[in-house]
Amino acid sequence: MLCCICCFDYCSRKFVSCSSLCALSVGLRSGKLGEQCEAVVRFPRLFQKYPFPILINSAFLKLADVFRVGNNFLRLCVLKVTQQSEKHLEKILNVDEFVKRIFSVIHSNDPVARAITLRMLGSLASIIPERKNAHHSIRQSLDSHDNVEVEAAVFAAANFSAQSKDFAVGICNKISEMIQGLATPVDLKLKLIPILQHMHHDAILASSARQLLQQLVTSYPSTKMVIVSLHTFTLLAASSLVDTPKQIQLLLQYLKNDPRKAVKRLAIQDLKLLANKTPHTWSRENIQVCRTLSVNILCRKIML
Image 1 (tube, rainbow, N blue to C red):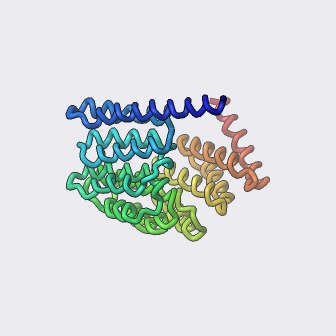
Image 2: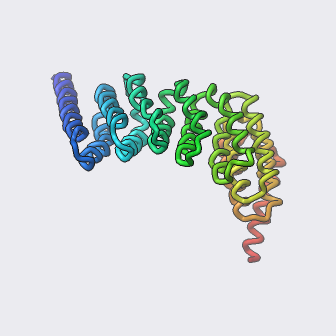
Image 3: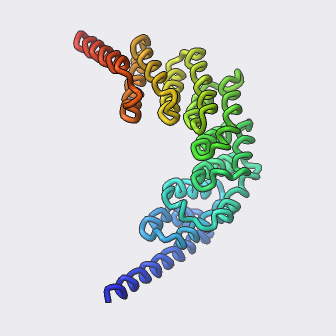
């Protein structure tokens, strides 16, 4: 009897979910932009309420069609829905068909449309980590003359580097060249540097990224550059584990010797991160130095 009730409840939920999807589909087909947008932004709630793979697969295919034929505002809405529904992406059954509809927009003459597509691909990196056409498009867009497209390519590159060793290995030299290039604006360099935290897939790749970060910290002493480079350094060390003791020493040096409060604050935060994540890599000397510096900082605050 209980089994029959459960089965009935499940079937009822599936029926209601399908009815809800049909209602949203009507909104997607509306000739009014406002109604289409309203339908798109209601999908995350549908996924949360009815997390059935068949429904989610069908819904994402409908959203991919909207992305393919809609305007940039609708594409942006679909992008936001995809990012909000990240935990449901693995339930998409027809991944190839879904990505095919999304990817068709990458060939648009509109750089904004391409930028939104790159961000969409980056948001899908967890389910398409080894998609070679996506890898190629990201590399190509990093050379674009449109700033919006380049920034979108940087976002996608970071996401794919975190998921794919092949992509990380292939893009590392490109990122290094851009960071060191004289023609690259400082603001763009600051956005490129964090990608290096994902170069932890093997020892050679991690070593190459660490050398570049060491060079950046030395060559660009501005506060923003030091903070971004040091933090990326720390995240790379925490993931690769091999260079964690060296990173602890480097952070302690900055905490001790750098007069800038922002840099000291960053050093303390990163030391705390490494202490929580890799406590076994701390030597007694590191702990003693950290304790001494903490006492000194506290004394200065009291004196002030």
